[in-house]
Amino acid sequence: MRSSATPGVFAALGLSLALAACGPKAKVPSDADLLATYQAHKPQLQAAVSDMGRGVDLVSLKGGKVVAEPKGADAVRVARLGEVLRRTGARSVAAGETGPEASPKTAVRFAFLVPGALGSKSIKGLVYDPAANPQDQVRDTDAFARRGEKARFVYVERRIDQDWYIYQWLD
Image (cartoon, rainbow, N blue to C red):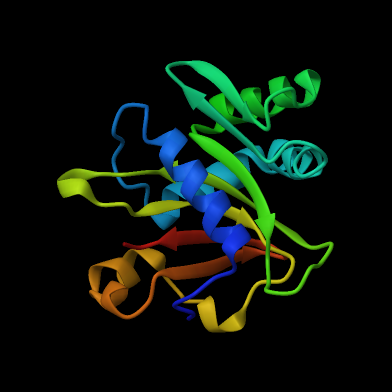
């Protein structure tokens, strides 16, 4: 489990966190909740991965409206991504590099949990990560967060399908 990430990943997660925080607070989704969402919406999530990265870096729901970065991003793609967010209950989707070297591999993160009680900056969701780091993987992100290991590690993933994971970014 790494305690550092590339600037691109930090930027994408930070921007996603900031924009998604504008909505109402939600309960922490369990791994079981996110696995059920993934299974119910797998085709839409996979299509959304294809829509990300080609001129669309971030899409979020803010006050019921779809907000995209960069400004002027392809409106049709942004609308499709907004619909995926509404159907799945995700609050944002962001694309970012997966490693320190420039690479064609991009992680696409769907955020479901954003800042919670007592000012927590934790974020939890689903990620398509074709270059996942085995050091980041745990069996259960729910148990990981409860054990208090967040003092040592800031990011973990639980594999649920080929290149799909449940992730949790801990503050």
